Amino acid sequence: MGKYILIIGACGQIGTELTLALRAKYGNDHVIASDIREGSDNLMESGPFEILDATDYDALEEVIAYYEINDVYLMAAMLSATAEKFPMRAWNLNMNSLFNVLNLAKEKKVDKVFWPSSIAVFGPNTPKQNTKQNTIMEPSTVYGISKQSGERWCEYYFKKFDVDVRSIRYPGLISWKTMPGGGTTDYAVDIYHKALEEGSYSCFLKADTALPMMYMDDAIRATLQIMDADSENIKVRSSYNLAAMSFTPSAMAESIQNHIPDFEIAYEPDFRQAIADSWPNSIDDSQAKKDWGWQAEFDLEATTKEMLGNLK
Ligand code: NAD
Image 1: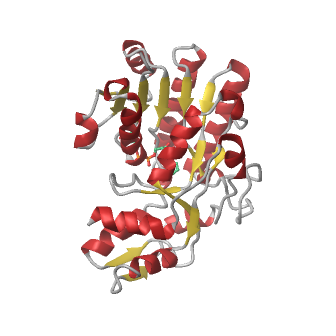
Image 2: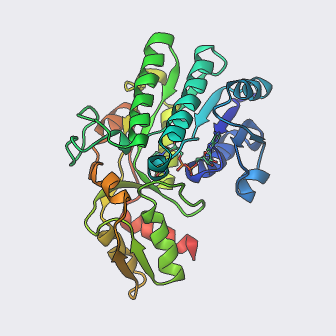
């Protein structure tokens, strides 16, 4: 038989690659992609797809019953930069979608839930270097507040209702298959496109803004790994710190210049600088390493090689 999986928000930057990875692992027909819009050709053509609004409990319940879903991956959300423009819409989407899925799991309509958190749960009072799993948080963005609240609810549903929910605090994710969806780390994807198309890039963050980042292959591997881990090994039921690399825009530009020597970068910080300034520079992910064997594989140089090679 094998399990059936529903991905909500499957057409986004992470959802697209996650769907393809899960289809390769569990079989195309076992992985149902869903979103409020259609996605890339390879996502739409490789398996089942449903138009589904994550804030509609009844519609979710119906799709889950129809496909006899075991595991849900909730990837729908409004990201950090966009959420600052539409605070209430972001809060409603980010929280109601999570409550819907947690409540379906509480009703035992699904077995296991994956819900991503973010480094945005940390704030200006958080120690910035090698930020620990448990530390001061106090997020100062709409998005960060929704993610921190979400973490508290995940842990609550685990403790109170035995809901098997698992979560990772993703750093900024770098990928070439799908464009990012309105986050503060989007520059780290845009820069490769512009380097190849125009030979130059104007960055919306300052040259020395260090942020935690990860190549998408590592993020997908981590997601499959935490969902495969034995339940007793998942000691953190809020969300796990996860890390791979940390770098500044100027370091990223240098790594591109090693391949495209004429590449030029300019800096024109906008409102996203304040968001980036409130986040950690680097993350301590020792708990994820200890509990379920996490180990990153891609550093900045490997990421640049992959990005330029694939985008060419
Ligand atoms: P994205 O914006 O690229 O994709 C989100 C998808 O959700 C989109 O395809 C969108 O159409 C869909 N969506 C929006 N409203 C919906 C609704 N009401 N019902 C169903 N689908 C809806 O985002 P992403 O980068 O793929 O992020 C996925 C998750 O990972 C989010 O929870 C995000 O907060 C988290 N995350 C992402 C990053 C990153 O760098 N990309 C970092 C940390 C955390």
